[in-house]
Length: 469
Ligand SMILES: [Zn+2]
Image (cartoon, rainbow, N blue to C red; front, side, top):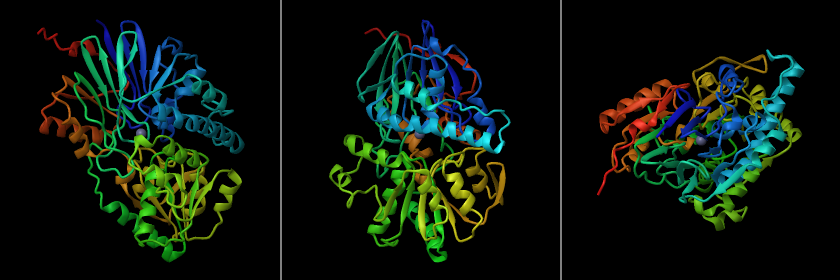
């Protein structure tokens, strides 16, 4: 039986998650993510897809984050018409995230044309709002833990605890069991439940984002307090770059806790500068079984653990612009999380050159992004073709990222009843991939390979001989 896997993205990188599964002439795309980061990464989204998108039979998504879903409208624009399977909460989140992603693509292109900073003339959007709408029309929501039968395989979505609706995928293909981890959450996350145990896998695809790091948990709130104390003393603004979905809710949760404990002022104004954030919070109410929060508390604005006492949701662009000149102290949360686009760029232009302000990173900063440059101590950054000096203080709290660290990845691997024949490491940068590979081999003795983008592996070689009773 012919079973192959092509690694098309998030292989040697953390974005652009795309793996193509070929089963007896059928083609299933696992995740359909956008490459994000610097110009070189973004260019990858413009490369032709390695097969005619019309020939893909179905797309199976692990979760809603754009680096796992944001290429959907592009594939649809190029002719994909099949079903897109994902969990119910993932589909609900995509309803707000894909149109937003399209809006950003269109904005970027318009801005590039206005200022002439793009190399492409005229700059075109990767896809439009109409493409995003078409992609949404193909969504097919599924419950967790229920097998879906497709031609040549069965697939089940299991809770991964990373963001609302996030799953790892369990495949049964003839005698072969394949598990794709998607993005794995944390074991003691306050908002999400821990990942479900793995069972059996002949072939495992494992994310490696924090494969070389351990998060320290007590430090989250301490780092937040430290960053806030700086801005409060100076009367500055604390900028927190964050995806509207997942991380923003984690940040709000911790800010609220700090207020309830009296560690930060009750009247500190917190602005959520994202048109998506309100809807995202409502989706947490709709899917009460998927997370740890008390639905009764969530429903009431005064008690909602995903709100600070003075929370302001900023929807329209004019309101967002008015924030630029607003005096501190204040907290502003805005996307994108890696400073690769979105409204955060305008806030950076205003706030970075002023030493009274601070920037708190709460998520992974991929190589080549402005976020990584700032973490590495850049003294100036380029935004929309202009240079800005960095005088604001930079803080970092990785433990909020919603990704398992090295110990938690290993803990999840230990839930498998036996060693897979082969484990492929995906979704990581070279240092974390190498460190995780060494750790797995040393602690568990598993056969582990770092997946390479553009390669195709014959999976049928890993099928176990049928064990006749
Ligand atoms: Zn994710």
